[in-house]
Length: 261
Image (cartoon, rainbow, N blue to C red; front, top):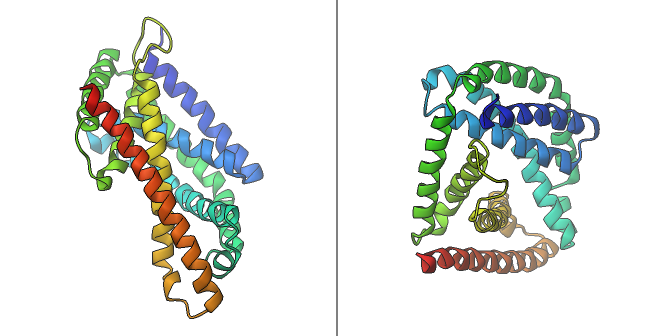
């Protein structure tokens, strides 16, 4: 009988190729989002396997999947900017610094490279398969137990904002790893709702950080155009307010864990 890890891996492989095919066909945001989620889940498996087997054996699949993930991230970041600017109707900044043409180019480039990414995924799956099938499920149980303890410990600390993104990645690793372990009943993870809500809120907060960083990198604040300056001042105020609101929300969620200790 297949282990939970083997079943999980098989589902990831199926979804990975389906999502890549969907994005290759239509280039829309949902299919890219789904593809990135599947890549994250596969990277989580690679990270786990790296605690058991020699990392040199996993070096190539880790490199290949990281490369595709970074390219997908470039598209995602551009989509994020476009959505925020269009939602708040900051058309002058959008057309001047973040034109739709850039996003269209990134999407077209990714879709054009989809056949190569498909070959990369095939190589990744072929390499990982032998490790997944030879891994004793007790090792996955031990890994989840250790990971769960790490997450609990970190959530009870007064972590600075600079460490939230790393905490989120660890929480997601813990959420994924839960599926590699046998459980007496489905959905018997009492902490799932809290951890998922926390990581989602950190994700929204981090998205706003990315937008702020892009504004800074493009040096929008240095524009000599009066209309750009006016729009930037409004945009930065709105962005800062949203960022502070999300920051406070994350702090409240983390404080809730500290109180429960």
